[in-house]
Image (cartoon, rainbow, N blue to C red; front, side, top):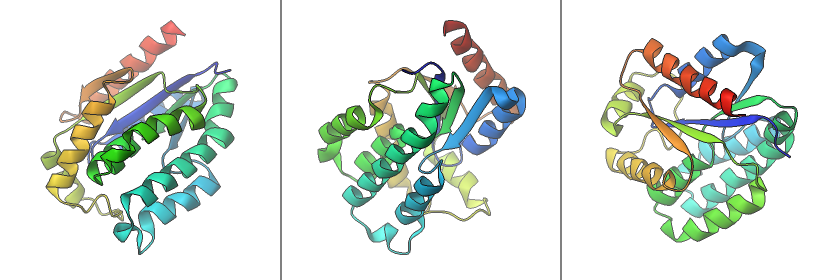
Length: 208
């Protein structure tokens, strides 16, 4: 039975998720457990590499990537997230199933998988669903401009065109009609965004 608080930090490419996750870690220290998807455990990270970094991943059918994402998530939930929540921890994940819905179903044009997505979500998560999704809101144009200046290695999703990322944004919007969420304007100074994020976390701590 989940006892902790499960938070997902989402956003378009270039929205600053990694920066803000580190800022939250610096602020809360051992009070929180930060993780990421796909990945989060050694085995899930291997699946992440297959889905995002393999030389053939960009040519794979959207269904293939969809299933790899859920395989990685099943491992992540079983061996990390669920256990931490049972210990009463605050878990903050950089991306989660919201990204699968946006990137695979909308970005990779697999809308026929919508019903299967929700069925799979129920089977894999077994009721351990995020308490809130926090979306760092940024236009695809601004996000891609930021990513173009990023020296870190990019995966096959990062390098796709504007139309792809606009479709992804539409996917996020639809997904959020089904789950508790809040949006934070990510086109502002880093410190202001961090302050807003801390406010959301503190609000959740008072509820649980």
